Image (cartoon, rainbow, N blue to C red; front, side):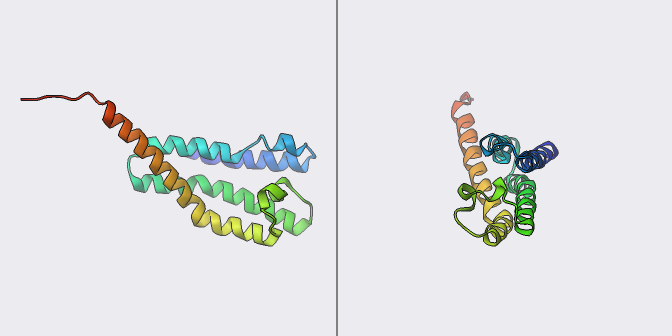
Length: 140
């Protein structure tokens, strides 16, 4: 889990630095925290052995993302310098204040819960597939 947390946070910092450095937004978009979170979600959907572990993993995967997002949006809010973190396609037309608060609240509530539900679905498909392909034994 530590590697995923570090990778998500590092990707967010790289994304912010590239954006602040004037790199084209079309290139900055390729540096995705969400992509790393998705990979982590798939991994922990299968690797975690209990529902509680998957719920904890969902929260831990969202925390570095939410932290970077809120800090970057806070920077945009405080400085007035636009960043990719508040681009129109990501802010859904909301103000910087609503967008920042929304990420903070969402990062503590529905975002990790949504991730948990996805992980549970993946786990269910994986576990069901393993059950269906397990050789049947006939003991007398």
